[in-house]
Every structure is written in structure tokens, then in C-alpha cells.
Length: 278
Image (tube, rainbow, N blue to C red; front, side):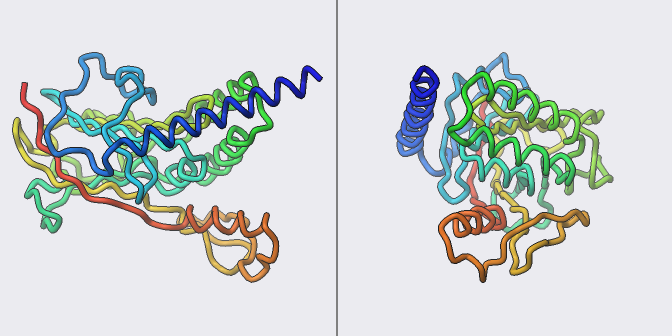
């Protein structure tokens, strides 16, 4: 009886959190206002949003992410959070690609692009499975703490590269997260399975000063995992097992298909940001 009561409380708690998140998302704009936002003085690139009081500037429905863009005197910051497990998997499998256009136009001859995380087949296989476990209602907070630790340890060990293009001082297309240029990136989850991505890019690398206008695009590339076969090949040669769409004659299979279609889909949006002054 105690076990049933505990499970019921855990389920109700998760449902309440989901409802609160939905209400919060509905109150936010789909794209952050273009007026610049000064980053908190205590900002850290650690995969946590405590310095933001766990609040965001926008919730974009096209990509299903919360996000905040901000700057201080030295860096441009992007914080993204996915509270849906499927979107979290999509980010880990396909990355978040940030495009910055200094011309303040969507069409720019010299865009800057930054991609993180860069797909790692071994890491993705482990973390996506663990994310599914957190998302289910079968686990209490103690179990989820253990799952959170396992996921974050795997992410710390496996997500070691950042994709770069358009920055003249960086000729490599992939750089280490421990780079000397000052670009920082991390992705971590909390014990509810919400994935937080954080990025910091030095303004000197962007070539933009105080008051400059930037056009930006945030793209969730997707895993490109879905086709009509049982097994598909990922970009790096790894494979992922899927169920044939033609055999989706029951609810559970249809749900799996829907998840893979979401994982596969490339989604993005455009916004404008003006660097905040002191």
C-alpha cells in the first residue's frame, strides 16, 4: 500500500510539473524580444539555470524549446532548455546549430555557425535510453537522481567537440570544448529529464560591439533517423533500430513512429538580437 501511495504521489508530482511548464510556456513569446539583455554577473556555463532563476525569455513552439540570449561586455550567451524527453534526445542526436549574421539580415554572405553537441553514436545510445527512463512515471526521485548522474557523466565524457564555421580566427571545423579561443558549451539534464544547453561565444570572435544588431537562427537539426527500414545508418556510420512504418498497426508502434518522426524533423526559427549596453 505504501508503495502504491508513493508511486501515486510521484505520478501526480510529475503531472503537476508538466502542467506548470505548459502554463509558463504559454505566457512567453515565441521569439525573444530583440532588445538586448545583460547577462547576470554570476553567469556560468554549467548546464544549470540557477543564475536565471530558472526562467527564460521565450518559448518557441516550432522547436519546442525555452531559450534566452544575453550578453555582457565580453561574451554572447545562449541558454536552451528542452523539457520534453523526445526534444532532449533530438538535441543530443542532432545538436543545436546557432547561426549569427552580422548584417542583421537572414541572407548573409559570411554567417557564423556554431554547433553543439556534435553527434556521438556511443554517447547518444546510452543517454537516449536513460532519458526515456527518467521520462516514464515508473521512477521516483531517488532513482531519477541516479539516472541524472549517469546521463551527465556520459555527456561530460562523450560531448567533447564543437562545430564551427565562419570565424576567421578559427580554421578548424571542429574544436575541443577545452579550446583556447574562449568558446564554451555544455549540455546537462536535471532529475526530471529537462536538458539544458549553454553556450558562450566571445564577442571579439563575432566581431560585434556594443549596440550591434545580429540576426540569428536556432536550428535543431534532427537525427535523420527515420525511413522505411528496420535499421538506418547515422551520419557517422552508427545504426539505430526503428520499426517499419508500414507495420504501424497498433498504438504503441504508432507512438514509436511519432517519436522517430519528431527526432528526424529539422526545425528552426529566426530572431533578432541587439547587444545590450552597459
